[in-house]
Length: 134
Length: 188
Length: 210
Image (cartoon, rainbow over all chains, first blue to last red; front, side):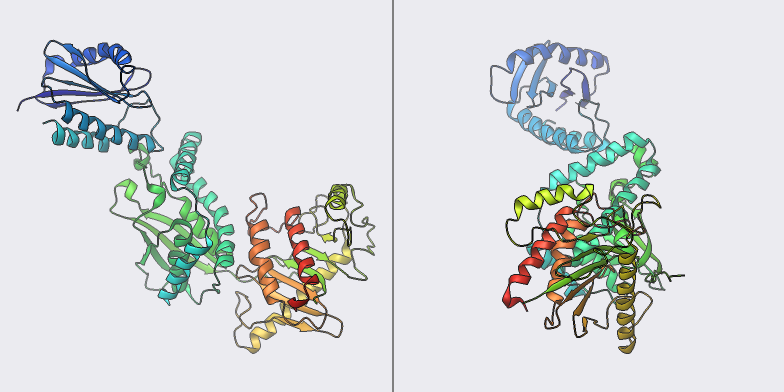
């Protein structure tokens, strides 16, 4: 399946901590992705008070993109742009990514709200994407 | 003989040691190292500070070990190595590194620390790896301090560390000389 | 019943880092030629005297004399003029000399002597017709000496107890105590003194202890 995904972690001050693309790369959409995710943040802010769950499912649509969000208790947001709907797979992906993010937070050398540069993290996220999404 | 130290270490660990939450301990150590890195901005200096801190811990810990167990002074350096691993590490970190790579003259050995609890959660930034930070260098100081209290002057250093991409962590302990007991100064 | 007269603790540098006495008639601390005020009278000790008056209602209301303090210690004298108890210093040196030589000759006779010291020969005590001196050496080279009445034969468990549960707990584990192996520091920890004093009091009154 030639699906495309764009995944981003957004810090508490709305700055991007991490971003990754899975599946078929679309060069033209690079900046558009960031833009769509950023625009969806406001909707996340609204949606998070409607639900007790961390996983907010799809919060926004842009053309053929769905924007799913997962709000960690620290208000760090995990955002995923995807085409096909697959709530359960995305929920699992988010939960696992959240756990990975927590492990990164435990690293004494990582400062919270700073960009995640660890290659291990990157590799693990890609593995998770393969497992749950692709 | 080895067996006996193992039993001593395990008994003391079970009955005589107050435990502390591992995460609290690991985070305390982690933030200490990170703060040193920030303050000194030089990884060699951080290694040195960690070693010094360890030394100050070691000179105290050794009395603590002696008070908790009924160990006698070791008969030789081989026994010392076993005690460090089976009693010292066991008592304070609940791991027992294996003793390996003895030098021909019996004055140097390695401690292979397969599971170093201090390393948990830690991932070194590439710069730290490149500039030679030994994250758990405090352990070297502890061993050096403890051995000095037992009249052994040693050099202790990390030679491998999983955090830096090596397959295992290895601490090299080198006996420089046995210190003589001090004699009282004469009156004149 | 155990009658304890004195306790000395020597560190690895042959320095007396702690001395205290009970029931001792004539002591170099009380007839001090250097003019050091008697214990409890100096400005530094006033607080202790008050503190003790509050906690101990009967028995001897005096805290036993201790020596050295950082003001009087040879290793840590603040200035050459600060009061110094020469008689006590002499006595500590002599005591160290006696136990050191005795231990060495015992090690030698057992063919277990070595430059690293230690007490492999197992020197435990010697007696005169007025007192008995008991000796314990920790593996780290700290030496504990206690003098008692002649009839008390074994104080080894007591000395071990003092090392394991009082010295290590209240001195070694006190982060403010300077344990630098190259410098001698007198033990000035009040908690240590109080616990030690209570312990000695306890074994002195316990008839089964001997």
